Amino acid sequence: MERILRADGGWEEEIADALGRALRPIPRDERLLPRSGGTVGTLRTYDRALFPPARRAATLLAIYPDADGRLVVPLTVRHADLRAHAGEVSLPGGAVDTTDATPQAAALREAWEEIGLEPTTVHIAGHLDDVWIPVSNFELRPFVGTVSQRPLLVPHDAEVASIVELPLDALFDDEVFGTEEFDGRGFTFHAGAYRYGGVRIWGATAFTLDMLAQVLHPRDQRLV
Image 1: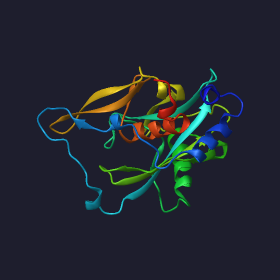
Image 2: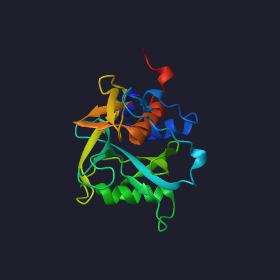
Image 3: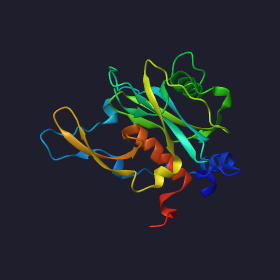
Image 4: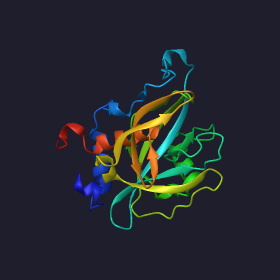
């Protein structure tokens, strides 16, 4: 585990091995699920059986060493004035287009378009479990990729306001994770979220990061 967090020799192989050995489905932290805030309004629940077939989407968790030798994952902060998902924090990704040969190709393309990550520098180590996003009816496939050296990333001006490098060790820091209050349409709700670099990470992005943490260091093996 320490080898992964500190980018010691063999970290790329260790990540690929952890993905290959991961139990499926990957256990998820129930604290991330939204729950009622006890205010006016009702927290909506979604029955997937009532939805049409979900559209395919893909995202990339690109892992690389930062200047201090820690392994990090880049997150995007969307512009606050966008019509969809304004100001939200997410992983590079989006819908699988008809021109994409595979969902993996879509994840690499989106990372190139959103943050300028050169696809040829990314080694796909594996993928996590799919995440269904009810509000958009997307079935999201998260791919995990390793990059041997820190890339020069450039946010796409039209969508991405900034890039935040989240250290992998932050996923195991109790001071980074906590329960937050969120405002909905006419109601409030609570959900688990990560706080790092001045941003709040929740929803599908937090679920995906939690799955990565569970693969790298299962909760039942952590010290209490």
